[in-house]
Length: 241
Ligand SMILES: [Zn+2]
Image 1 (spheres, rainbow, N blue to C red):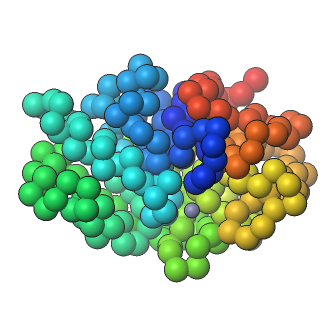
Image 2: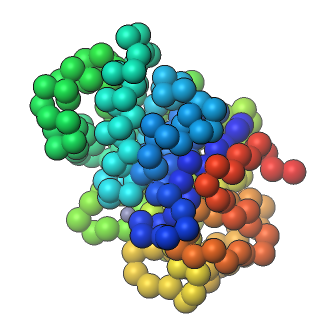
């Protein structure tokens, strides 16, 4: 499994772009990065991703989708279909996002041309994404929004992705269902609300010693012993050796 980081900053990090992770050139996990620039820079055409998994609707995880969707349609006469997975409310969120970004006419046109298929997920739901089995976990993050983390199984790797999260039993369940986990670490210091801090990551690593941690959504630039620190345009081959 190949994982490329298209954006590894927290919402307001000065050193890195917003969250987006590309799996095997086919699956995007969140879409906060400027995808019409970062996909080509990673050597991937806008047509290649077939699925987008949205963890939640904050701007730093979703706004790049407006560019990917219309850019892909306008730059290519023939473009493959696209599936979007996300929490409840994903279809109406996507409609509003595209209406605000480009207007209703462009939203209808791009939705039809991409044969956009939206699957809304709740805690414990399993789904198929580009031939891989996925599972959704509810994460505690923003109380007014449904927030998810995911696991996907592909090429013998069980990859977890936390999205944005606080410590919770469901986060532990996600980590223990994974052999590699891409986790947010917004706070380098003792931390605050809504997100994970270094001390939380160290606790999780102690509780799940066989899981490999890859840290993203980074508010700072410090490192954690034993974890891979993601940076923009880092590509990893999983399983890690
Ligand atoms: Zn968030």
